[in-house]
Amino acid sequence: MAAGNTVADYLKRAVDRLPLDRGNYPYVTARVKAKKSLLLPVETYERLLQMGIPAIARFLGEGQYHDEMLALGARYDGVDLVEMATRDNLATVFTQIIGFSEGSLRDMIGHYLDRWDVWNVKTILRGKFYGATAEEILEDVIPAGSLGLAFLERLVGLETIEEVVEALEDTPYFSAVLGLTVAPGEVTTLAPYEDLLDRLYYVHLLEVIPPASEPTTLFHNFVRLEIDVTNLKTLLRVLGVEGLQTRQLFIPKGRYLRRSDLREMVKLDLPGVLRRLRNTPYHDTLAPYLQEEGGDPARGIRAMENWLLDQASTGSNLHPLSILPVLDYVIAKTREVENIRIVARGKESGLSVEQIREMLVV
Image (cartoon, rainbow, N blue to C red; front, top):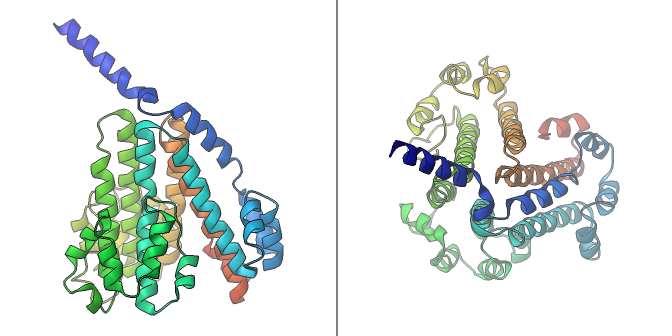
């Protein structure tokens, strides 16, 4: 019996470690590795910092953004062209990854990319709240999640926040409305609703991908690290801000940080926060920016973003036939687009090279 149990346990472990039955991991990771090789090297950002916006647009048109720059060049120019082309490229690439994935791997990637649904719902609600035109709102929509472009365009075409919320009734995001203390049309700030959307996304993500096998456990653990990083970034942004006691700022189920601890840290100064992080993996990364009362939380936030990039890359190398190479690429690709936009917007705003460089995460 004992020997039988040992063999059964061995076979279960072997199956759990073998992802081929649950998705086409070798094919997907090979495709993603090829896509990652096209990302801009770190030194390229120094070149972009020395260029004007027209030169940046020409440079992007010579590489992986060629198709989008060509397709949009007759309608947009300058910063608008850079932003629209990078947006469309991001949506195209992520949709391609979903398209060539299979099985539970496809499910995991799809659920992870639903973060763009949250982005888009927030974007549309903000646009309605501040009176932006439909065209202005659509420029910031990134159709890379489960909500298709046609549905998003329908949302944008609605007149009021109430109508947008009603149209979301058959989506997972409608339940966030239940957490509002006032009717959608009576809100004076969208922050509580946006907080609810973020929590809903991560809680749902962990629920639909339980850690039942090695592939899903790797995914689960990485998402919980990402929740910690998201919560720490929120913490550093709100330190010293009054009137947050009634806001549920933090996302549950992080890897090392409990929400109760984070709520207590909101009341502390920077050195106090650092002391509370002493026994976590985040302490050494944040120490240079939080050791003194006059520290730099903004640089701490960028340091945590870099830390997550490094964790994704390390996980990808340690587990090459898992979802981690896909997450590594998704995060790196998203960061590339954000960095390109930072450079373009900084140039348009007249910021110095040093100021723009300080905002990049590379």
